[in-house]
Image (cartoon, rainbow, N blue to C red; front, side, top):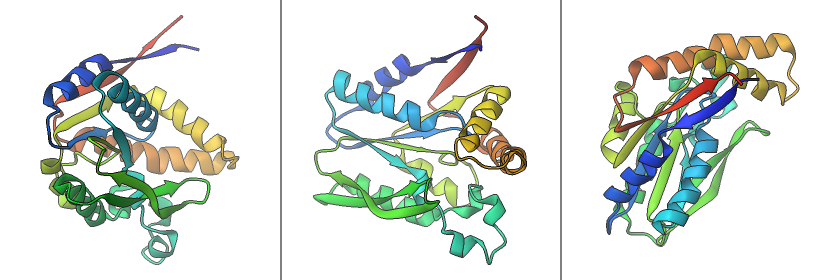
Length: 217
């Protein structure tokens, strides 16, 4: 199997360090489904703590999924994960509270993929947190309600991933949930990959790119 190498992470840590000051710093980490956002966010969080000495938390965009009970009557359940299946206003409000930095604790939601629902109050951000890594597909979209987010970010990052690598990761993801092969194919080809194409074509240029490079052994 080819090796996968992520390029640009050292430069990102340097950029965050250069922009870190007395105020909270909010980093947008955007990319298509299967780009490795959660994994990269966790690695970046640890590096910000170890190398910059800054308490860091991850804010997942997926916590703002609309519930199935909302999507079903709107005929959007099959498109869960598309840009119009999120509470964008809720995410904007949370980031504004984080940026204001006037509360001892701020609670936020986290999406539980095993349960397929968001758990309110599963994330707690305290006053000591100085870096927030917001990770999600649509953070840098240049249209609709998503466009209101960009002014809230101090650093913007996008992940560039080869399409075949995305497809393989997405198939592996849904296979781990023991879904039938037909449902996996539908989720990947009719929802995940089209959502990723929208991210690639409709997002603003970031401050910095992270790029997955696939190398044959």
